[in-house]
Image 1 (cartoon, helix red, strand yellow):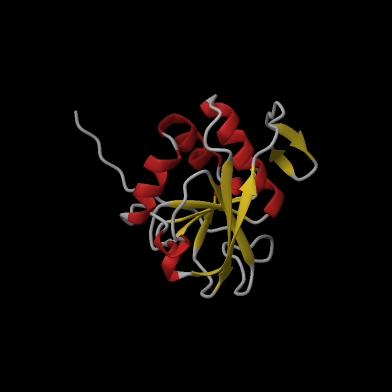
Image 2 (cartoon, rainbow, N blue to C red; image 1 turned 90 degrees about the horizontal axis):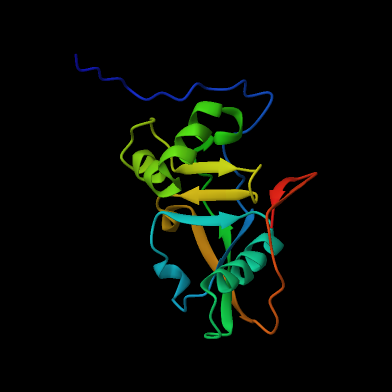
Length: 166
């Protein structure tokens, strides 16, 4: 027997939570890769918290277990069009799907429209994370800051009052 189902996202009570972020919100993307931020490849992950993106640079550097390069980049963007986002904090089934299949697989399903007309997802619980399928549609580059990596301490995810953070 073969079974097929349509993925759905259950809308939440609009009074409780938003499923977007406002125009003029600042978001950050931390990376070890040197590239023009206008050319960021989708899907792309951002944080609403600057320190999380900076810590991500250090985390990735440490995880590579290398001494080169000793430079990272913090790209700062501003939201120019409010994206329509899935809030995965309020849907445990979606969190389970991400845990089982990975963020990239989940983001590709969003991009293909398998959950409806969404631009990405919001995950405030984990790093104040924002994933956008096509960032150039909703973001404008403000600046890039070169981050020199001098000393990398051991860094782990920890549960904080804001949620899981580096």
